[in-house]
Image: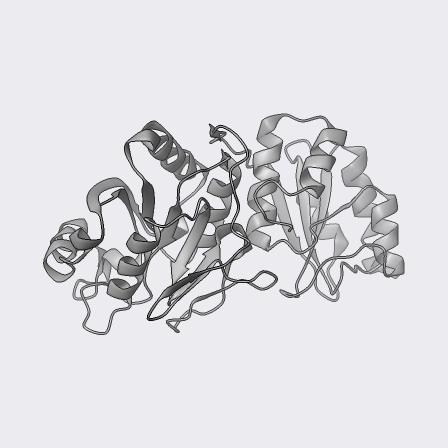
Length: 330
């Protein structure tokens, strides 16, 4: 059997619903893992390791680095990795790790649950069994296994708070479907060289969600001396207001003059940002704004943080952002 490292980081799967506020309970989780799902040891030689224990709302770039370093330092000892993680920011962490690891040759599978493992009707058992089994398969990607689906991590987003089918991949097909048999897709990435790891991220970014009547004067509170990238969550294919008091173009120009990258995403989950379609998009492009294309917000944020940390000059940042590093744009 293959050797799989199971990394615990917290999340709903490890909560004790009987405690006040459904608190994280690592001791109870560890007990349940071995008593309720003994068949995991029939799938693989499993080693369990606690990396940190947090509600995923508190997970940040320092935790991403810790996960990267943990996997990288033990990469040669295991055939695959499973990460138990809270669902709220799972797509962010999975996206971040997909950019941190280049030429990954082994599976790194995220999973969790909508209901704590300690409850009878939990989805934890199914998700965990599926994730461990897929970690033994030839899936050299950072992926999310949830509700009998395997998603590319940087193409996924959480879409439901209370449904077992918590995730979706708006613009990209599944990596695998899990039924009586596991069916792998033919578009799984293949490593092109030796593994490298870039675990650090720059958090000097700001996300602005556009809405009708956005008072542009309020944007003056953003200190552009401390901000290296602004992500505008625009309308449709990348449209912004360009007339009257709500005209966003002066703010974009101000950002660019201060050496701040401007990246355009969409509030629509499906299809792509295209700055060549409409007047406002063309105006953005003329001023040096970059299109996020089909990327999710999670991928856009983490890719930007990753590239900023790499210290690229503007031209190289632009070419790297507009290209595909880990299948996030394909």
